[in-house]
Length: 471
Image (cartoon, rainbow, N blue to C red; front, side):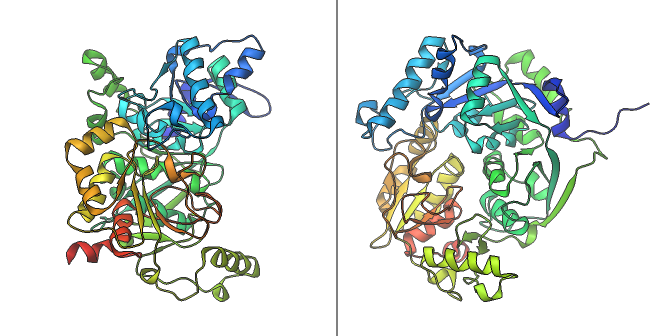
């Protein structure tokens, strides 16, 4: 009897399954464990128990959350607590023989940029990191989970992880994306359609012609924000785009091993007839450049829209929620998005700081100037991204336009490293979360693509980048 068709997720899950408990928990073997400075304290847990990392050769680290984007010197990290996190990561990885891409390393960067860039993220891997946006790595056909601090210590000690098997969801985006419509717009449109809890309890596989048409960098953005839809992970089946992206990278297989790996990877995509617990269809032709207006990624609209009226909400709970968000964001119902001025622009984060993102933003900035009163930053996602951008002269485009060209790091994505907005400032951000206070107390965050962020910077308000580039 032939085996039943299996999904991409099921193939990777079953390959890494060690055992199952009666309560439904499964022990999974972890193929790759990534660490950042926020997880430095997990080593303290092991030390207290007299344990050492079980598989140091499968663990890789980089400081990103707490590093300065104005300097590459640890001593210049102003907050002593943050400086200690970066220093502890360096000490612990050195002690245990773990490869760290520290400050000054040519491959240092945001962990979710560094992993794919170096070829550490590969199809078929079960990969974990103590960060919710670990789902990013699923763009290469990996099963990538974000884990908590207790789980980080467990994986360090055992190279395994207890998990309850999630359900599966396939989101099919067919059609052809229009001009200036990016992976960021696709995922914002998806979350707006299914809601911030729409994929709760599921691993998402993205499929369809519009997804296949995305570059690897677009797919990384897409999978990065799977968590904002409530998903446990996000994945795209590996294909020729994946293989060409990985070929020749530092940790990618070489020679005959490369050919063998690609042969294995070709067997990973979901089988024809594989059944998903949930199916979602999205019209790719209808997606437009998006901007969020509230305090959840689901509060997103096409740039030609206006701020919604709470009176039109489906129930009193949603009406009250909308009223609170509009009060926090300082917005009035019926205001066109294109009438809303911005104070700051942030182009960066593990969502949108790769070379393709910077090229898109530079194309908008070229020959233009940042509007009066606007502070605009560009923060490359890694040292390789920074080097490539500078080799292409993108940093000159940005600085000539009035953008601040920064050092790699998480920066303004989260208000933990000194890179924050002032209370009440409106930020056009290419990051992944727009929660209250995410970019600093009282900061008002709007999510959008790098090109749309650059358009906001040079016009001083949210603008349709399509019209700007056609002018």
